[in-house]
Length: 191
Image (cartoon, rainbow, N blue to C red; front, side, top):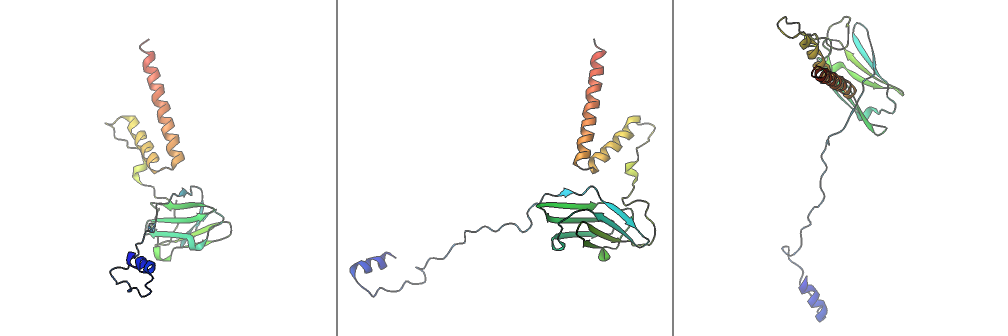
């Protein structure tokens, strides 16, 4: 480049063309964004469901859902449906442990103007007593040698671990309040 400038200043019109090693190579400075950045989801905690002998229908009341912006994950004993960019928010409707098995390949999601219908096809015909699986872990442990309150504590622990944010806040507040009352009672006995 300096040669080119010097030849222009000297008035020489015939400057030699630059060689391939002298031509600068462009450097890309753009940073590629991750394909799936971590998204925040609002849990759909309120929905209704209905069933017949062949399928279960779950009705999620959300407006503004676009069919192309739905991500589904159906498994034999669970489902997870994510609604992206619904009026600026991402929503998620999931049941981690269904009462009975479904056929994932047949399940589908249909968008209506005021709601979304999630259709789960049952693996075996019949009536489901509940949508969620009722496992033994939700029953208090009634071991005779254990502290009687331990069963209730196990139940509270399971509710906390599986609950939404509001449930966790409620249980944490109840736990804190109960502990502070016990502390006050213990102090009264020393007075």
